[in-house]
Length: 319
Image 1 (cartoon, rainbow, N blue to C red):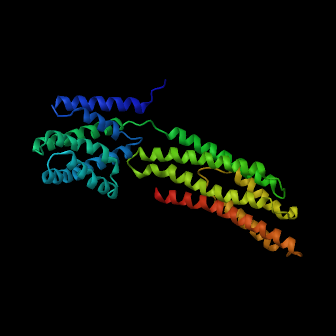
Image 2: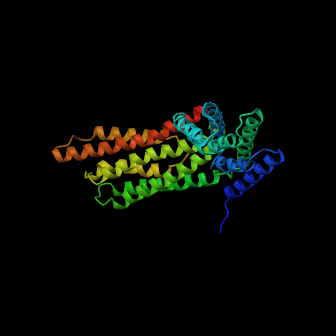
Image 3: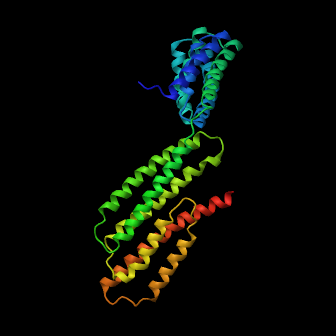
């Protein structure tokens, strides 16, 4: 049986919260431990958001409970009325995570039949201790940067493979391996995006959003690459018309990298456009349609490169 880091942090936070609450002679000290368990999220930002939400939720709960208990007494019926009002308001204010824990805290007022200053301080201290210990435990999060860099290397290698295959399959009808490789790469990028999101949520500054934006950019590129693969099976033109394009695809694969600004490749694509303009016009409808498909392929390829160029320029300007 493997015990994960989050389990260890949950145990420590819960035990310390109860211990501190007991040392402060708070009523219902075990509630602090439960709050710590519920407030310890997967990431730093998630824990902070949950903690602040529960504190705000407690203020709302106390106001509603005070009115209900004062008007109708300390009874189960009054507690039911409290829930009837508190739950919809919490959902409306998007603080539904605080419903369960704060409903439990409100039962302390019901049991003690008091809204004294001491009771109010008691409940807020239970909340602060539980939330505070959860945040303290989540100050340490293992870095995912090494794994994200590995994701980048693997994804870029997969892109290179597909680009080489595109060049090799020009004017060929068989594209099944390309479609399968695109689908595998799509799954790999999705997993990398999830990892990047966790990495981002474990940092307070937005500088860590780079990986999220990078994998989003690659996913957009993959959509265009998939479109190019689908067009590939329909293209059937004279070999002279695809030689220039094949060279550009191979060159792109050879220079496919995170720090490539794409400008040289865009210049090569423009040369291919110019070469097409200088060729003789199609003589038959079939030839015209095939040339049109080839032109559409080239357009998608240009957009594919432009996406990376825009991304690179945006990052350069941000520094």
